[in-house]
Image 1: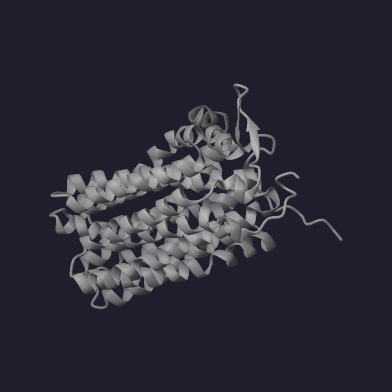
Image 2: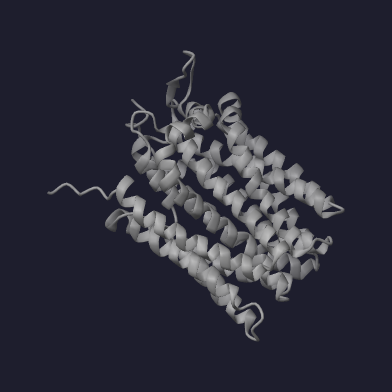
Length: 422
């Protein structure tokens, strides 16, 4: 029986992919909103705190390059285990950090580990989930990731109130990574659970799992692939990079803003956790809108909302009701981001050539991650040179420019396919 035909249940991949992903994302969700606060407590200015928070995106971008080689050489499950171990080492460095520089190193290593973990879990799905179930499995995986970012800040809020220490939250990530690694280590041979894995023949004639081959194809010759698809990546890919930029800016700028207007640590985590709940609640609705009405119906509202939210925030820093404005804008940005859930992955699938999609998808992901890494660095630089308010305003303008690019190039490169008539 082929991989696509055999009996399969999504619940069967829970221990292998869903639960480790949930734990990993809970740990990330707990620490990421508090990185600027920890940096600030170690003596970093707002601009330097933003730079340190940006290191996780920079680590993910750089990690995109070797992650395919790692996964293709040691396998999906082992790669996830080692990514969890690297995360533990990185977080222990953060806990022991005596200054912002060491903290930045630890956060950078978390980003590297995240890149490997993300590609490995995607490769695992490719190997063991039949094609007929794969879209649902990946959609569920994306929802679980957002659920972790929703749960993590609430755990952080409670822990800070109990311990009085912001840095204690890093231990949440340690525990979560230990749990994820233990699940993967104790898991039976996946072949005994899912049946014979789907295989593929590599370019050198060797046979390996379909997921390992996918990982290798996505990373090998990355810059050559970017050059080959420079037309679409230079246009619609720039829009994708700006999507990544706005999402990363929101992640870094909101905690910085909260620190700058004097909100305390547990309340920051609580506000961002509630905002994460809005984001999580919309991931399924976003997919439904894209499938029923087309990609533009989520792309434009999402980017216009993210851009407008940052612009509004830029004018509220020194008003008397700045805390209320911050809460309102944080919720609005989560609404805008949630409406665009799955947009990048869907556009990548639309654009990828059917006969060999993996190299293009690797280039597409790298383009989006490049925007995600560059934007927080720009926020840090603008904050250092001028102010946090100007940084928010500039990124808002970039968000609206991204909406223009998506509105122009999605109909050209990824038009909505007509449904076949009954």
